[in-house]
Length: 537
View (cartoon, rainbow, N blue to C red):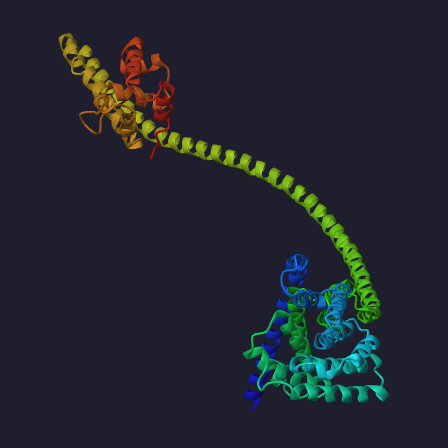
């Protein structure tokens, strides 16, 4: 049971959404058609001019041509239609044609009823000789009398008169129904109209629905039918359906250039009740323009009695909207000011933070530079410690060895002098081979240097072309070229000092250096920088 309730609720919701969408669509379409109104009127006036030209040239039966002009003007403009109605009377009178005279009076009475001229309508109806009318015009005659009484009932709106008038209207409708062919358009429309006049609108409008579904209708007939059909949907739950029917009816009225129309007025009233003030105001103005153009005095009075209420409500709502807009504007302005003040304060704070961040960043950069300098100094100190440790030990060993050799040589020479063996002194001195000692010294230097800077030779040769690279015969020893730059890597940059250590002239050392740098892949300064940057282990 609960599930069924949910399904029904869902279906009702979908129906409501669909109905609302259709209503909005039709109202929008009606606004579009209002904008095209002049186009439809030009088409109608073009047809009228063509018929007038035929009448002027007297092509065909003048009565038929005047009838066509009357029919064109009947729902378009009262004054012109009345003029051609009078001409029909004149033509019929001159021809002494009592049938056409009666038919002409039916047409004029119908026109007067459209204009809300009830007395004149009844006057003309009283003059009509019913016996002169054929079945079609007799049907029109009874429908006209029914319409006159039902409109009079609506106009009086008094219980004492409304009921008798409606009873007479139904009586004449029954007479009209008796003249209709079975399943004809006239029969179904009149039966449906009888339901409306008799107030039997709680039943389904089957006659009108059948007409819409199965019969081909003109734009004007469809508009009339839809307006009448709207009377069957009076409950609040059917408001959207009623509005859809009236909107569609108003659309067909515009397309058929019908200015004697009730749909736009009823539509405006319904929209006004539901609170659609802008649309109600737009459509009531259109109804007023149509009534003024056509010349329906009664309709104009009706509209003028409603229009002030709609206009005042529209103005009131417009003023309320303006007041709301002003309030919203003030609120938005205040919020904007608060936001701007907050943004300004945030901006000031951010600016201060940026200054602090900039100072911190600068200090960090300074600290980073100091840290890099300290790392560089630490590397150099470690390097110097390594070099000093190895080379100091090395030189102590060498010097100790030479001191021991000198001490042995001294004692040996002293003994031979004391023994007066002078001839043996020179051979003893010749036991010391200076060249060998220097070679041992250099080899020891090379070995210690390579142990401190194991990648020196690779880095050095990476700066030269392959054919110019210098590789020692033994991986643990250096040659003269490499030794010069090894001494430079140890911090000895003076050419004379290098020359003294290697026992070369200063010019020779200079030539060695320039020759190697000339073949280098980089500049001389860059070559020296890279050599000096070789890391110690």
